[in-house]
Image (cartoon, rainbow, N blue to C red):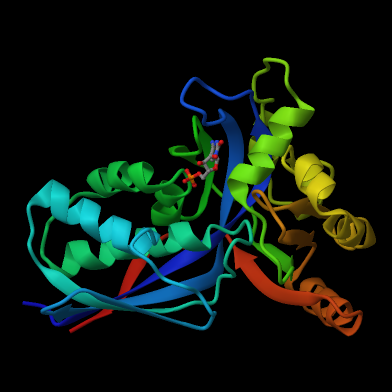
Length: 294
Ligand code: C5P
């Protein structure tokens, strides 16, 4: 019997995010390229008689709707387990930043409790439960670099051709994903398919980061910028600071892909001096994995 399991789960950036008109279930068909980053949340699940959740690192109100609780409830429901756990999370991924911080916590909960409660669920079963919890949860489990279609939960891994050095520019005020999709629909009311991302997928297999110039694109940038002109201003300021600049997910985090680790370190320092909140992150990073158990 294990007493405690510690898991790390990565943030993601969408290197490309193409959006189609909404399906009958309200979700938008996507063609997206995910890259997992070495910016991680760490979650520890310990054996306990009652369920509890503590979150450190960011001020966050936790209620029963939190993805961690939902992940734990889903596991219990599907496996018939009546176990409990005390869960503690050290958050490094910003909340509502477009980096899948909530999804990382759901993925971490699935992996940690599967181990702590000895449920024996396979990676495929965890993927399916993850997809029920949120569109980005399966990729948080998988990590690396992948093409995502359907809601983003159907994944095909891409063999990474090069190490990626990113500067992330954060904004203190988050953006609501459903609100950004609603604004997208208002701007693009006609039925349409998500544009293909083949060119980027092909270029990612090449070894030169400079080949990616001009290939990073996000259809949610237009609605996000319409809702938050200040983010559009920041984007324009840093648009040519590296090889390519892209808004991640529904924003507001902006990623600048740099030619090297060193260039990214220098750029992060410069942007910080200019008053922007920057974080260095590299990819592709591992998916959700156990780092300690006792
Ligand atoms: O799947 P997830 O819970 O992360 O999605 C949050 C919201 O984002 C959904 O309720 C929906 O409004 C929007 N969404 C969408 N199409 C997707 C993914 C998310 O419309 N493919």
